[in-house]
Image 1 (cartoon, rainbow, N blue to C red):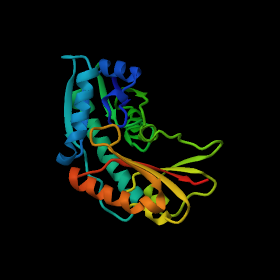
Image 2 (spheres, rainbow, N blue to C red):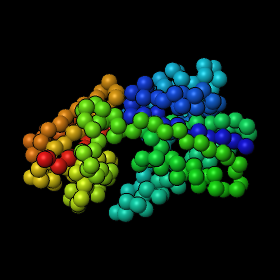
Image 3 (cartoon, one colour):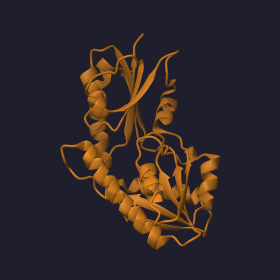
Image 4 (cartoon, rainbow, N blue to C red):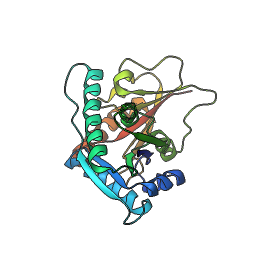
Length: 251
């Protein structure tokens, strides 16, 4: 039997690691690091810093692989399913070739494994295959949402108010009905600009918890273009961007 630990490692600060996650890291014999390319080398550098702090020195090894690319196409769900199938094949090869029977492997997941991350679904599919004897465990992490609200020193919800977590793709259809607060992730198109004039506040953050953290907030009508410009500048500077934002109806 092989064991696979899916460990949430927080939004970017090495001290986001929970006590439970630190203990899980110390159990691992081999870590799988899936690199998204040279321009995201900082992400793997952060992962390695976490391992140096919390994994058992001299008792683990690291296997790095290049993450498959998501194919281009008009149907987003189909593209994601294809990407996940490619990731699953990569994980299966790693489990077969890099992990001995009785050993424990670990996958480090940004934020929390339950929130807008495919790792848990992929591992579920692998474990369901009777050809492989794999036991897996999941360890929660600090989400980018928690890191964002803490950085801005705000609550997630208004008093007795509803909260919705969504994507930029869905926000482009408009502010959801019946909620006071919307948290938006995976927005590559500055979808918030379409909501100018709807009496909203915005709290935006990029690379939250890291040395490159950028925070902006205010009335959306005043801040929309400023945030769009900041996103473009950050993406140009770093080659990638990891951000989220919270929209709240003004009282």
